[in-house]
Amino acid sequence: MPIAAKLEEIVEVPDEVNVVRNKDEIEVSGPNGKLIKEFTDKRIDIEVGEGKIELSVDNPSKREKALLGTYASHLRNMLQGAQEDYEYKLKIVYSHFPVKVRSEGDEVVIENFVGERKPRKAPILGDTKVNIKGDEISVTGYDKDMVAQTAANIESATRIRKRDSRVFQDGIYIVEKAGKSLK
Image 1 (tube, rainbow, N blue to C red):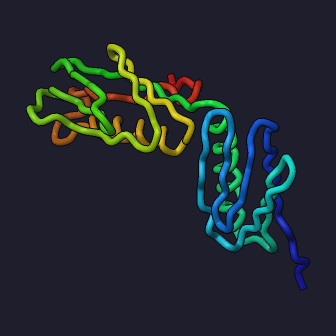
Image 2 (image 1 turned 180 degrees about the vertical axis):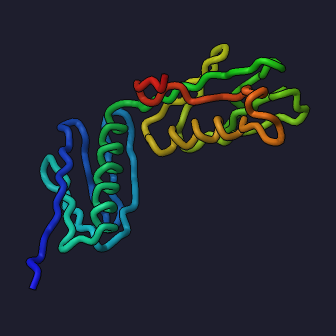
């Protein structure tokens, strides 16, 4: 008979951040903002204590081990976002037609991309801010998921279709993520 194993992971909570659990939701608030995320899987036990969050699972399968790591990563991202902003930098690249990019309400509008008459649009999610200066785009916010998805939306809005990608290398590309250069 195999011995029942228990897998645990502890996430440290900084002093200036407050963590509250309401049923399946965990609310993290700090000097930079407040984030709320649902953790609905009942197989992972989450205990919010003084200065730490304990995640555990009894007799874990491969999927439950992965889920435990995912939950811990989400919580660390929330804790960091409550203290400081995440930033993604994008670069506008064009060789055939000059591209005009502007932020308009809750979307980024990309005009004259490879000579198209109809502008392409990318949604801005959550409380994310988009700043455009010349050929540089900066996407910032305290929710890493929303910042990353907004940057991905901008990048995928300029994906080249029905043309030779070796010739038409125009587009908007992510070049830096939260301080890490991709070069």
